[in-house]
Image (cartoon, rainbow, N blue to C red; front, side):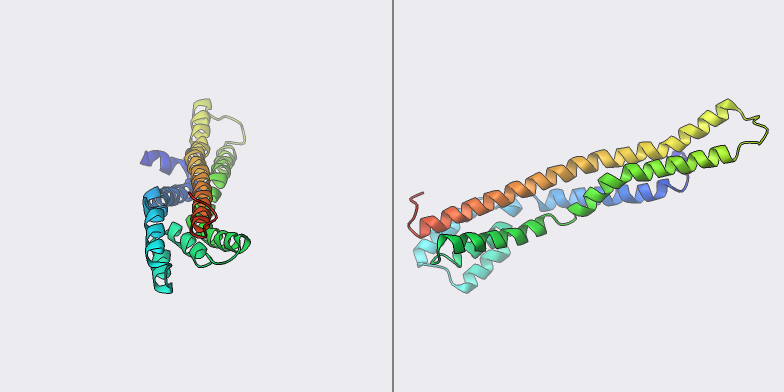
Length: 204
């Protein structure tokens, strides 16, 4: 493997760096976007019980709720406006959800950029390799076809490596974006539902 990397030339080194970054981002997002970390189980029921038992939640309790999880931040935004109209409550929930969406989508732009640019970087490496191969041929044209074919195959390593990086990066980027969107929708719906129950507008 190392001999292949050396043979592929300098264009493969940016691809190697991109692959390391992509793997690191995927691992980090897999850990950060666990459901138990974003929407802890039982949090909604615990908040509803505490609110009803104490007749509300003070600012200290709401601040603690915000620090628990992304879902806690959206819940706190809704609970701060329990006494307001539905429109005000919805706006406050959506504003908090937008901030959470930005935080949950951290690094995804970088991962998407790697997914889209890796094939182009690989193609660039192949083009550079082809230029070097044909530029080094003798003017008389007496080149060895086997040697030429070997040189072309080495140049194509860059394109292949670029695709190897791009495909899983794109898959995980799309997965993470869909996961974040699903989390945000669920948090907004559950928070609005809780606020309406506390306001007496809904039974369950």
